Length: 227
Ligand code: CA
Image 1 (spheres, rainbow, N blue to C red):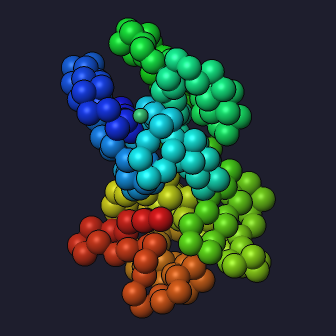
Image 2 (image 1 turned 180 degrees about the vertical axis):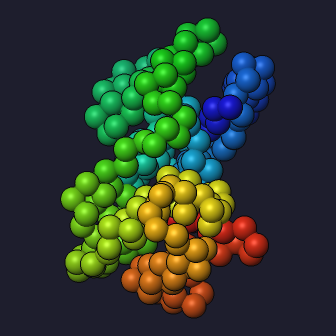
């Protein structure tokens, strides 16, 4: 089921869209403020975002820009007011995928959503060229990582583990899944191997590896990336 985040401060519009999206079989997340929308976008990893431009606390433009800067490539459809022709241009420049001008027909918006979701199948090993969190910047294509601008050495396995955890951010990744997807058919690693790699990663990435902020242990289940 595709998960859609709607960030819109007009309560009636927000509720109307939410009900209609649910009827279409989408899972819906809602936010009425820009900062709140940004937080949900990062933590809940939606498949698509409907993003109003004029929002309290943080504009839709800033939300979009910040997500793209983090390397989050989720499709974003911006909602712009009729008089804001300029919005459309700015929106596309900062990395939005499409825009709809208010007032719009529900049918049109749903059609555009389907186009965007088709372009990017849900969570299908999305290529993730780079990602940033805290002081860390990771380039998965060049295998380069920096912390506070200083180069940081990570092994190939560590890149694989991080990529999987970040792609699944906000959800628990079990040790078995890590073994399957990172180690595959190699040798006979044990879940202990996974734990050792996680310990090493935390030493490299966390300010306080004993109290991790980004790579959390979920007792009895596995690991979860937040950031
Ligand atoms: Ca608004």
